[in-house]
Amino acid sequence: MPRTVEEILAHADELAAMFESYEPEPGDEVDVTAVSRLRAAVVERSEAERHLLEAVRAARTSGLSWSAIGSVVGTSGEAARQRYASKVD
Image (cartoon, rainbow, N blue to C red; front, side, top):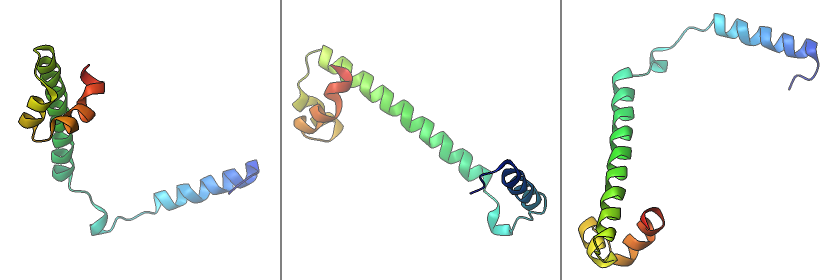
C-alpha cells in the first residue's frame, strides 16, 4: 500500500495506465437486459413485501389472529407473528 505522496502518485499513474490500456474480453461484457430484468424483479419484490406488510397490518387492525394470518401467508401463526409483529404492531 502506497504511503508517501510520491508512492500514491506513482500508484495512480499505474492504475491510469492499466485503465487506458484495458481491452475487454468477450466474457467481460454484461448482459444489460438481464441486469435490467433483475433490478425490476428486485423492485417488484420490494413492492410486494411492502403490500404484504400493509395487508398484515390491516388484518391485525381488523382483529385477525396471527393463526389466521399465518394460514393465509402459508406459515404457522407463530411464524407469522415472529416475522411481522415488530413491523406492524
